[in-house]
Length: 185
Image 1 (cartoon, rainbow, N blue to C red):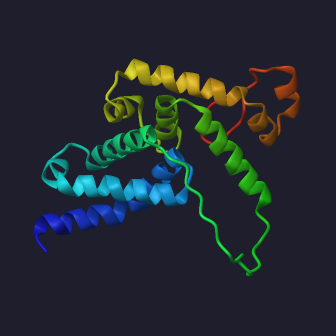
Image 2: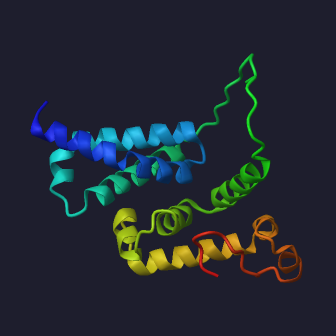
């Protein structure tokens, strides 16, 4: 292996968990997240000389991933997999966790693509608005606006308010804030 290949392998190994987390939040599916992260890394490998000489390699690859996701979102198809067997191993009941995650993923899925990307990058990747603007190829003021609009929609979501423990607020005040981890009130 060449030095560039070694650098790419080291980068990929360190950044894989973060890329998968972001990809999952963007896609809502572990399978699609793996495909998205792998596609982004494949494109990054093809441009590795340019990526490794950038100021922030992780930001560069995240930007590639956002573009790959946007391209895939445009030609999105619904896929279903049927199996003839059900798992037989006993597992702990995580119904509440699945419900919460499902409600959050559904709420994120209802956001327009740019708002969803901005909210995910800001609150799940802890990126600054300037970094998000660079990743999305837009102005910082646009990013702040899209984050504010996306948060407003999430706060107004009655299902999220009920799950966050504010069912009365959700019923009496439609714009009551929802206390979600990582989201300001």
